[in-house]
Amino acid sequence: MDKNHPNYDAERVGFQTRISHRPDLIVPATTPEDVRRAVAGAAADGLPIAVQATGHGLPVPATGGLLITTSRMNAVTVDPATATARIEAGVRWDRVIEAAAEHGLAPLSGSSPAVGAVSYTLGGGIGLLARRYGYAADQVRAVDVVTADAEPRHVTPDSDPDLFWALVGGRGRFGVVTALEIGLVPVERLYGGGLYFDTDLVEPALRTWHEWTRTLPEEMTSSIAIIPFPDVPQAPFPGRTVAHLRIACTGDPQEGEELVRPLRAIGPRLLDTVAEMPYTDSASIHNDPTEPAGYYATHTLLRDLPVEPLLGVRGVVEVRHLGGALAKPQSVPNSVGNRDALYFATVLTPGLAPGADLREVRPVHEAVRDALSPWSTGGRALNFLYGEQATPEEVRKAYEPEDYERLTALKAQWDPANLFGAL
Image (cartoon, rainbow, N blue to C red; front, side, top):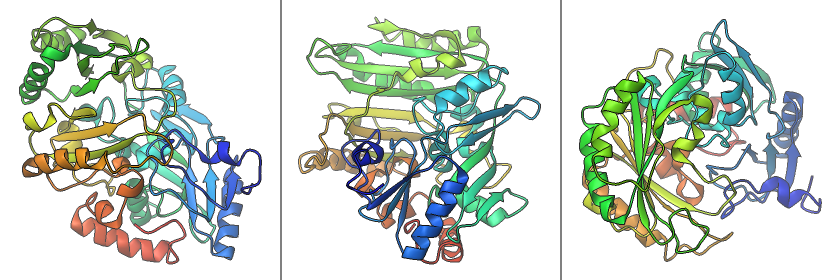
């Protein structure tokens, strides 16, 4: 479809509405053959290619060229004997979670079940069970991809270890991935939920959570968000700034309850939803927004967590606890970098209109990043480089230096014309 098609705007706009692709042509793919033909046509005409499943973590938006949308490719097949799933390019995590749960298994999904599972995984994937099981990327077993020569390939660590390594962590820069085979983990239930503290307990909650994370077992993955709610009736906590502690523990529920006791001791809670739950209810832990929205976000990977720079920020602040399995060598190598970080701090400005002017927003984010710089690892997380932030300089920071050089060489081999965009 071209720009004159009545469905052009609906097809190109994803979950992130502040920025959107504006391609010359869109191919709504339903099969791998659709993808192959689209890549062949684009290559023949010298058109750059962008790909979109859900448009949550939208990278540099395409202006002109060809956009392949994969949301219609949404089949999921679970093999309980091998504890694996085959997921197509447009599948969202909710479908994978439900399919795996029928066999007492779970994927390494993120906080929102509406996010595209394939793009999330190829960029790393820091999920609800991350400290116990590592990155979602670490569970990839095989990749079905159409490369720049319009050839469909089934890539495994044995069949082509270099291309596999580049695809898993390089996201969409080496081809259009049409399906993944991923490992599932034996998690049917967990001890999890949210603790919500009112304005006067935000600072104690952040300080207590930080100290609490220093001695946690890998079975506990957690994060904290500081959320200033607007003073409107439809807001969950109108006019309040709330500390939302998020808990996901894969150990025994009684052990989880003991671990959470110091957090409950912070003080009275506005809401306490932490309890044993099926993994199918895990979306309630973060309770992320489900409707498309415009937002701007920046992040910093940290060796340790200072508290003061995160207080009084004009926007939503989120900090995730890393380490554990995230920092361990993976059995099947991939290119996901910066595994030495212990915390991941994000500042998010929500409620932005399409094409919103960021001149007032950027200084807020830059001030927080500058204040955190003494504790920064200097790295970036690829999945969180949105829009204009996904510059070559920032993307380079998502990898170890030697890995970036290896990726550059493989990029020149597999996509010499930069059909899928530069690294």
